[in-house]
Amino acid sequence: MPFDIRTLTISLGGARILHGLDFSLPKGGITGIIGANGSGKTTLLRALAGLLPPESGQVLHDSEEIARMPARLRARRIAMLPQSAQAPPGLSVRQLVARGRTPWLRPFLPMTPADRAAVGRALQAVGLSDLADRQVDSLSGGQRQRAWIALVLAQESGTILLDEPLNFLDLPHQAELVALLKRLGESRNVIMILHDLTIAARVCDRMLALRNGRLTAFGPTAQVLAQDPLRETFGIAFDCTALPDGRPVVLPAGL
Amino acid sequence: MRPVALILLTILLAGLSLSAGRTWLAPPDLVQALLDPEGAGRMVWNLRLPRLLVGLIAGAGFGLAGLVFQTLLKNPLASPDVIGVTQGAACGAVAALLLGAPAMLGAWGGGLAAVAIVGWLAAHPRRGIEPRAVVLQGLALAIFAGAATEALILRMGDGTAGMAITWLSGTLNGVGWPEVARGAWLLLLMLPLLLAGRALDRLELGEDLARALGVRVALLRAGLGLVAAIVAAGAVALCGPMAFVALVAEPVGRLMSYGRPSPVAAMLAGAAFVTLADTLARAIAPAALLPTGLYTALIGAPVLILAVRRMARG
Image (tube, rainbow over all chains, first blue to last red; front, side):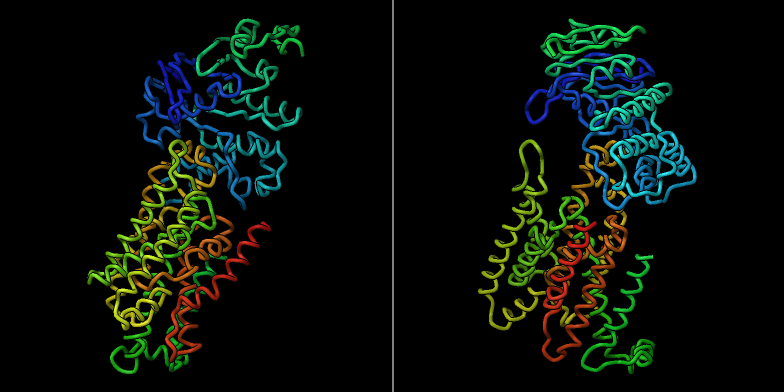
């Protein structure tokens, strides 16, 4: 089990954000986290990355408690792309992606050929090899988002956490990134927060729904994207239908 | 390319500094003086060389401390001479002088007290220490520490008070080998700051991403902030609170290292800056003994304006 969450409770500044979550994620595939604003999605993702110590309960990764892992070793196993990530000025795409090698670098020594090869593979995987020497500032929104994904790929961790990676992208770029994420899900554990339920239906193998810091649904995508769990998660009614191939399509009722 | 230019510039300015003064030395005379510490080179060895070395060390310390504070607090204004660390150190040093204690100890006490007070004032109960609050609270603390220092000076005799006032604008007058020996200790303390380049660079990706990459941000903030305060206070003890050095070294160092936070570049920029100012202090009016800090302020203000404008344009 990549992740075992046991009665995880987290408070921030005195306010309880997550109330005793309990679930286990199986190996591989893509897990989508959904929920309304303020439901605790980002807090859960940060806890999975080991950035927030549990107030009570445990977060286990491959049966090891994350809170006890040394930061560098944890970073080799779990990568996270937060929404707050900012590209410092003056970096080329390759230099930005190379930052992903940080947990593998020997202290105070430069990158090894193996590090450079990992950066090259990451650039290739997101299709940015030709733009590697361009300044990050000069990229389009879609290219920039792919550069960030490449940074996380260069970290070469088995688990990748993404906070709304599809935000601010137009439809063609979303489609392109979804294809990339699906490829990633074949070899790694990908866990990401998503807002767009239509896209979530197409990309996620399983989903986890939160409301006010409590789990409202967890299971295969088709099971979570159904009228009852969605009403419980978002507090409004949904129209649910399915494409000919069986994948669900959902819309808030009355839209 | 550009970092090498900064090294060459520092060496060039150091040579110029040794030549300059009431009597100017041509390059061959300077070499001869350096080779003969007991005879012809006595003046260079006893006066100019220790003065140069202390200036280099203090400048390096100011530059490093500036880089660390400005990067940790994500604010190009948050240098130790703006957030009150330098003023606190100066106040502590003057108090120590009045009590007959070593100035270095007083400066360290004052500098650390300033960091502790600013950290406490700027701490938000939920969000932790807020960088913007540090700058504003630090500004207030700097003014308060300045007033306290003046109050202390008023209690001194005329002669000591005059010296203290010159020292308060930052001066290398009267510096000798004992100060170099004390500065050598400071070099040791600068080592962790010199090695912090990668961590500071990762912090600029945002705190969460830096942590996800395995950087221990909280430890780094506390450790580097503490060491940077000690280094800045130590530099104050050596040559007084020299204006603008810490503030200017960071943007200049960044320009020289392609926009990245480079401790080596900030250190060299600070060292070169103090050396240049002290050379001017001794070359323009050798008899007047004008404080070096006067010239760091005169050069620093326009350099800062240019650097900020250039960065704003990208």
